[in-house]
Length: 80
Length: 306
Image 1 (cartoon, rainbow over the protein chains, first blue to last red):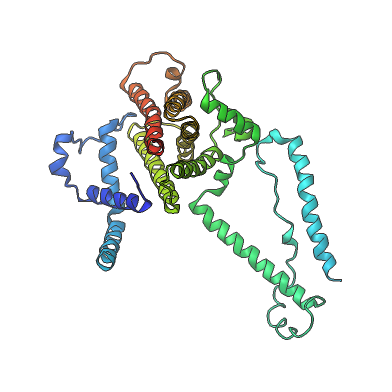
Image 2 (cartoon, chains in turn red, purple):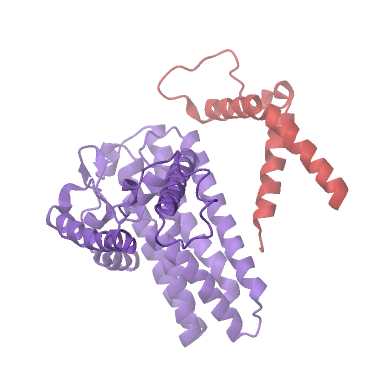
């Protein structure tokens, strides 16, 4: 109940790490993968949007995640 | 004396806002001028930037008042300060859109009173559309339906204070708890806004709701929470539950009526049943956003009343 901003940052880092570590082929098979279909209608649908979101988060956040994770590791080692 | 130019400069600064107040109240419906411009006339002192460098150090023994070099030094310093301020403003505007934020704080007493009444009793209000003026929304001062950030900001601060008061009446208060309450409520607010943004993206709604609009709508529930907690403090638990129930229903109705116009398509917003999964999804989205408000209202206040 007593959330702090620090826990929000922790949650965000953990969630983005989870998205970055996801193995597309294994876990998204049961999700209705439309990897080949572009879906260029005016209604992409929720599943296509989720896949697009996951792919774009992975592409954009790869390098910043490396930096943020390294900083977290160093800080946690130093300060517990 | 050399004080007279600066004195008249100060007097000029005091006179100008009065003149501009009268101007803006006469043609105040233009909408392009949100606030009266109170910035002083300090831009006229841009004289002799180069000469003021090495020379004021040599004259430091003399009196500062009657020295033209110190005037030049003051002019140079003020021009440096204004340049620095321009640079800070320009860089800050890239991260936080300050000009857009100003729109949300352009309120007056009548608007605040009407909006608070609308938040507590929205059942008699008929016209929920935001009026536009040449493609830009009208400032909240002129339209009750426009979202603003003044009420949410004040409501948040008042909620933290009222929470401190409630904890104090139960002898559970300590100054750190104020910070804990504030950060906790802020985190829930941020998570709610992020969840709404995510769901708006997933359902591919073409809407002109900005992030700040969503922040404003999510902040309106603090009014109901404050009413509930104050009623609970004054009259006990039954009053808390009754007033919270009333405010939850009011906020639910308010959110549905407001979001219906923004999220749903034109036909569905008028009340006609439109088939199709897209409209169904949008209806579910509106319902769930509106239903999340009473849940948060209860979640953030139940531990304050015992």
